[in-house]
Length: 115
Image (cartoon, rainbow, N blue to C red; front, side, top):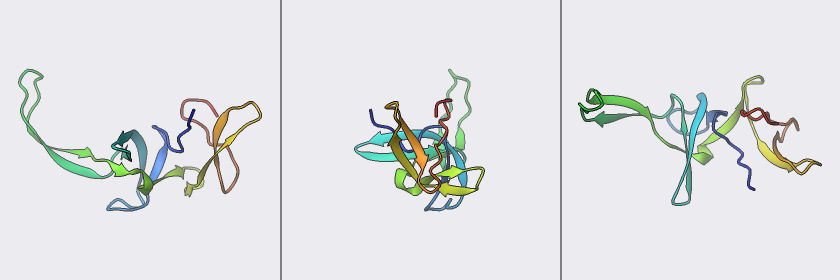
């Protein structure tokens, strides 16, 4: 089974674009036509027009929402050390594959409670 270097719920930093240097939580990872894109909370906001929907009792108008960012333009962010993390993947003696920081060698804790 393949293990992803970035997972939903991780804190990431944007490396390129209009929001370069800003951090946020990874909301979604999308793979369409072989291109990986991610959605980060509060970053890469675009305006989108919505029609009124009387059945759902929703107002129409212009709303801000997050747009997709290319996967290569974000990196994992270490909140404690306030620096980006180079992520590697290694197999433990138990056969479990885990993510680790290439600089320090520390294991990266999973947001789902596994290591």
